[in-house]
Length: 361
Ligand code: SF4
Image (tube, rainbow, N blue to C red; front, top):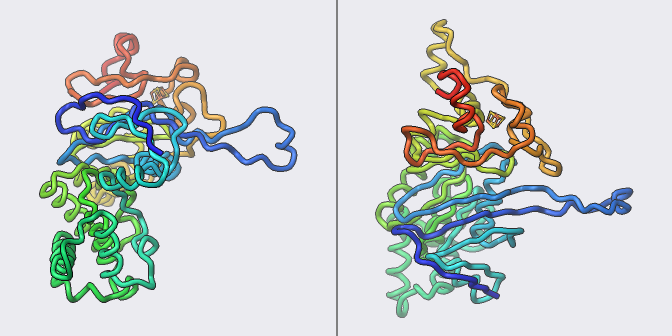
């Protein structure tokens, strides 16, 4: 069932928007907990605002358990949300299966982390792609129309000639080829949005770049809005136009990728970047230049059943102040960096006025 609560014209290029997106999973009660009167919940995602634009890759970066995959599943309407709004082309949309869900997924397609798990091993590539084309009414007329549609799909993901792949089973393809088939299946719907949940993390390092280049090429050729979910902030710089960082279910920093990755503002983003492999940094350290070696301890995230009341990064933050323990930091736009923001009290006007300049550099 679909409920379209409201409709407003979105800004130019905006396809999918989330506002105040929240997901709390109830904790199953067991044993003594049955006697508890207070239902507990995992605060997996809280108050996430996200905008996906045509022809743009947005990276959603965070460590395991940060809530980034839950955001993707909420946007794909695979989970009901606890609160917040999702607008597709400006129309507030909630779908629960059936025809409305099929209509929604025609526009918003998801690519999963494990290409082998997402393809049925007993069916050929021809079967997977034909089924997707028929579901979305794009199989063409007759055998020739279907044949052309299949060739076009495989051509889009650079699996040519089509005859070399159509009658193979998933296990006969490499991991990279399987992920290309999964992408082709998503394209069968002719979507506006691709939600790619860690699309290269299960692939050999040697073929990851090829898949990322393919997604970037598709973004440009098909004017797609792509959400690229990853724990690898270094790949976000290379691949994404915009980058948003999540920590413990909340968004903590966002802006254009170059700015976020080269001039990170939030202490958590700085830790992520320090922990990312960086050949230049390793070389410098080996040469005895005294640079960081990238193995810095980034600690553990807080419990999401009882998250800290103020900043969720507070217990790990080297710059934490008294107010960080009690007050949730809002998004604060950084001076001289239009569109780049951080949810951190370090950038509040009052803190900046009281602090020495290097504290916010
Ligand atoms: Fe650290 Fe406070 Fe900023 Fe949170 S709000 S990241 S605790 S300085």
